[in-house]
Length: 197
Image 1 (tube, rainbow, N blue to C red):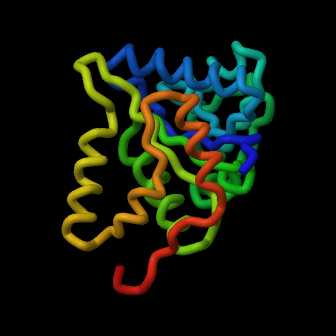
Image 2 (tube, rainbow, N blue to C red):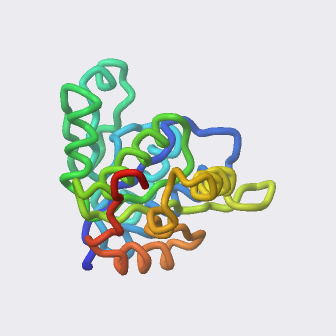
């Protein structure tokens, strides 16, 4: 499938690692340099802000979607190509999904995980056909950021609660070009879940 617009999920905080913050900025710049429009949560701080900074600095298009209560708390970023202010978190996620061809997950916390699991689940049950990827950015300590999650997901496969096909449908890469190639190759026909699997 052809990708023109990528939804990026990531942390609104900076975390403890400058390495990840700089990597997020590089991802934003890399997506822009490849001609991809970036849809994200509209935040101005943390990894979110770094992604937007990378996109805008490389001359790309950054589309923010943010709930009005976050704007009132001055959590948003105004120097974007477009900023959509919506009424709720549910509307935010729905619009981000509608505006995107695929989902790319960078390091983050419970909000990022919630977004990731929702779009992955919805793909598996056929509510959308957009591919989902975990970009396993290297940490300062070595190893990929998502390795503990990948190990947990593998444990769910071994326990019989997640199918191997579902896990294999995720694109897991530590390199942006490999990630984009994998997302484009997945297309819109996942191995759908069956009742009891």
